[in-house]
Amino acid sequence: MIMKHINIALDGPSGAGKSTLAKRIASSMGISYVDTGAIYRTVGYAVRERGIDPSDAAAVRSILAGISVEAVFENGVQKMFLDGEYLGEKIRKNEISAYASKVSAIPEVREFLLETQRAVARRNSVIMDGRDIGTVILPDADIKIFLSADAECRARRRCLELGERGEQVDFTVILNEIKERDARDSGRDTAPLRSADDAVLLDNTYLDLDGTVKAALGIIFAVLERKK
Image (cartoon, rainbow, N blue to C red; front, top):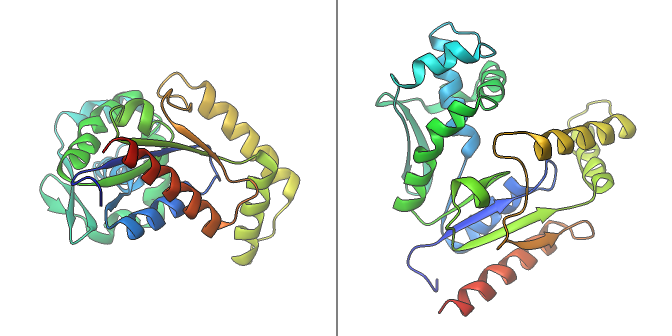
């Protein structure tokens, strides 16, 4: 490691392979991978436990001041705590996914979790992936990468992934879903998807996973070398 403490922001559109890449980089560099989805799942869990409809933004907002969400790393493993209670696998249940998806669209929830995510980055060397990490969550990250691939490539990868699970897929349907998701993410009012001005662009349309990892690590160490 060139730096004792390092924060890496990895952003990009749906299906670009951000999480897979982030985990590989974390393993290669010996830093922590921040599962931002688990953080939102914790709020989703709190909402479900209180019997609140996650689509009821006002009701969700009303509980935020009364809950505490904390992400703690132990031996590189992220553990989520709600009001001091370790949740373990409770947040991994299927029904929590829908809650997390809906509460994450509420601007006040994103604002509420901003400090939780920044606190993790202050305490640990991390790589964090998402759609607004370099622009909103960690604007002062040491390294910012914007990972992208064309929509057709991302659709093919998604079809392959679903097919391996035994699910019936239609390429055109998947492609249209990805294009619609891109439009929503880029056009939303709160934390829209965009590349930070100082991010390095990495297009992995024609790269496999190993090639993407190699390219990303090349970017990371080139930036670190310049900052020595």
